[in-house]
View 1 (tube, one colour):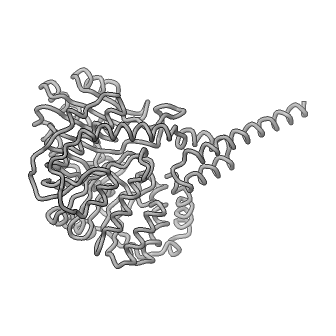
View 2: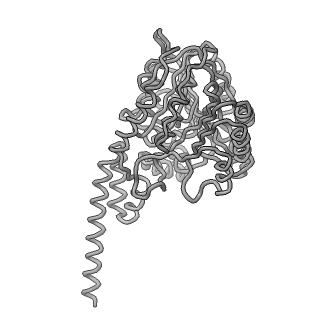
View 3: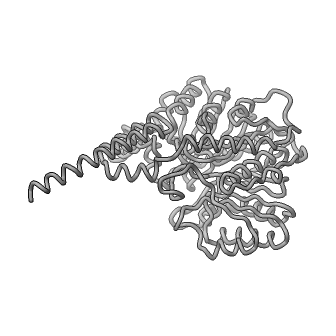
Length: 467
């Protein structure tokens, strides 16, 4: 009997070892970075059963075919973009336009919407005026007073004859109630969930999520930024408390690019081509040049990382970035450090409280890297700050959904709009100056923090490639 148990144990050990080796090889083939592959391999080899399960849920994807097919799909959609109102003079946004593979447009206008009340008032007000089409996309929609207000507003417009499309990236089993979605569908609203690459566990995946927030009204007016649809973003969630965030209202030719970004996600999710509906030529309404940049895991160029690297390289005397997370890719960190060494006023604004503890503590392990070369890190004190905003010098701003972390840079579908123009820069400078006035500069080295804090931060940083 003992011999049988021994043989069984050996067989199980050999089987787990073989499985771990196979899965480790798959991690080498599918990981976006060498650091990510190394982290997965160590986890799988040290904890074969747990590591394999975690990799299949969080790591594995049929990435190559997804990358090829999604890229071709996006190119087909943007072939519909109008050539009108494209900037015909050099722009400081040209680098970002090359990353986005889209032209810089001119004649745009942008208005900041600071925090939840202003954002929801503007978004719901614009939805209520729609006459023809509504494209609506959110990462999170909750069945609370905010989510239900969105539902009711869309239903009212659909019943008034407006064509409504809604994208919502919810996980199976833990998303919106069936009755909530049925009410939307019964009103004739087209609904879909964005999709990433094919995975072993199908739609149940935590990576390759669509983090974009976008509303396009009649192809004339658009909104994007950091807020989802939930009471949390009004500061009414008892577990999170006060909330600081930023959205923008956009008009002008840039709206066409945003509408086509929605169409590209819709086509990949459903197979339906909305490009003819999304293509438009909005009139010039303001002084700003603009380009939209929508990083995705289908990009060959890691556009999310290149976005931050470009911010650092374009900056001549100032670069202020507000992000809820600070877990940068190594190349991004190097670019930021070099900007500080060039004498750029580099400031990073992050929350003074955590919503995800692993990323919160991992960020602490990066603070010293910036501070050592003259960069500054500030923690916002009155609320959890969730905005994703950048200010470069006195003429470039960016507002969108891109976080300063590896997940946004490599694993999520994101969206931001960059503007060139003094009026936009003045508005963002005023907003961020008020935020820094309510923030505390980090002047303590990690080695001088409490022992437990330093230990947790250093361990959390080890997981940075897979955060």
